[in-house]
Image (cartoon, rainbow, N blue to C red; front, side, top):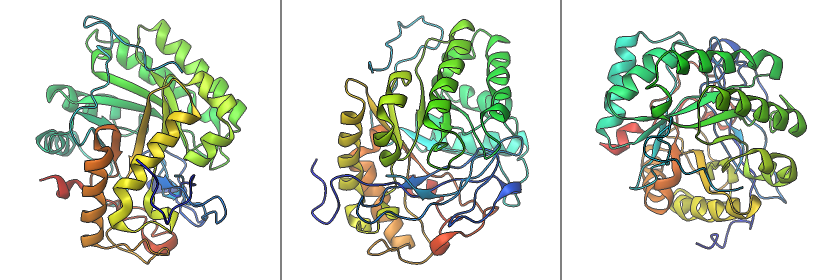
Length: 353
């Protein structure tokens, strides 16, 4: 699809996630642990401010800020990860963080209820940002019991790559403890806007993705490993990041563009996915974080609100829902409100009832 006439040919994404215990201010709160990321891109000629992401308790993601190779390896039905990515339908994945409204870890019973709800709404996949809060046990167990595929994450915080490295070991240990575990893993995402947030350089991130990929492969994983950035960031560092990524991934948030209204969100996301395919030629493109806030202040023509969120999400769902991860399951009350006062208000699962 073509980009809306009011939007630039290429955008910068604007949105990050932060962890409950480490939200700071940098137009958007930033957390040292992974759980909720998300940003959207702003016009090249009018870049948007950066936001922060949630960090995991052990490692959660941060809050929102700007963000606008061979194709995924095809697996045989009996391959360890049973891997082909299911992009059929109008809503592929939902992002999920196992945190309470105060930022603590949810009990496994609540996680099981949440995952059952995601499955009932028709989603085939669930995206985690890190391994904290029993993400590899409670969340994975609940997801696999409901035949929900997992998009696992390794969160890189402001502490850098060395602090994120233990997550590789956690994933390998979990996966090798049961032959069935890899079968439910659809994709592994190393880092969430780590370069955009200056948590790592593109070169450092590329080396870390390769390191993680080698460790997962040695442990029997045959599915795709990638990283995700804003489209603007990935475009800038394509020569470094595309070669180590099995698929092209970006977080595409129309709200942070400032020139895109809620009614244009779907067309915008679809056009950005087309651009994403051209950034890493020959690699399948996926939008790993997208949505619209239900509360806050306007960013240009992008206006938050319940009606606007419904219109935007429905538009994205129709235009690109089969290759998008919707952000997020519920509002993140543990975050700072951030720029435009929108960081807490991206919960959208109620729109899929």
